[in-house]
Amino acid sequence: MTTVTDKIREVIREGGALPVDIATLGDTDDLYAAGLTSHATVNLMLGLEEKFDIEFPDRLLRRRTFESVAAIQAAITELLDEKVAA
Image (cartoon, rainbow, N blue to C red; front, side, top):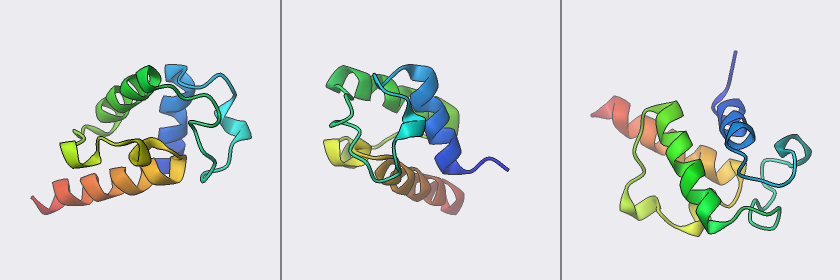
């Protein structure tokens, strides 16, 4: 079974958002320290929105949201929970 974290890693890997292999990074490693740029963050966000059929609201459009796989997973879980509750 594919987890949310697996899907996030897939989007990062497919989107070319990092100059290093995402498989070499832990869930809490800083993606910006690993080479994620502002421009790549936008592409990552768009890829995640497509993959999970969500939209990141303005309150989540900040560096902290995309700084690690764990941070992205927390934001996506929150958005999916809100979507189910709506």
